[in-house]
Image 1: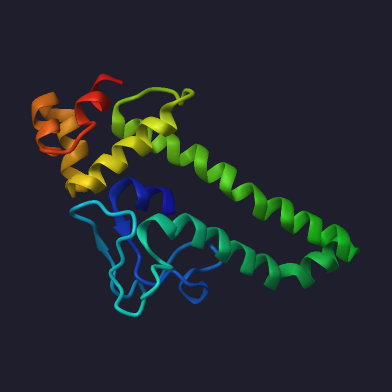
Image 2 (image 1 turned 180 degrees about the vertical axis):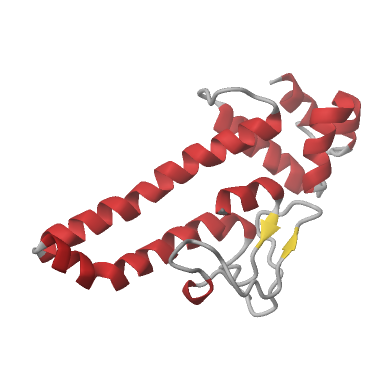
Length: 172
């Protein structure tokens, strides 16, 4: 779910543990919204003064929420495994798998938005470079990808007027 949010520029207002169900669904979005101009640090909640739930932090918060869930389930895992050490190891393996799975799925989604096929070496850097350009130019999140996919290079580059590096990014 968070991967899809990252793909469309959605920022959940307060994605803390009491707003995420055991099934991974979120509730009580509070002040949430889709970004127009891209900012990795975009928040929509007035109570989020530190950017804890900022756009770029959503994957980290999802991971943190999984850690909290694992801690809450640990007594059941101990009962199932019969050994506390084994239960902790199993919980850690499951929780530590999240960043790897997230990154793979995120890159596949970003590649799709960029019109790229299977993930290859360098795709992550290419995607991140585009996000940096988008942030520098305050480019519209949705329109940037739409222009890239549907309206050609000229319309795409208009999003980055006056920002160094856009022409070079297109050539990559």
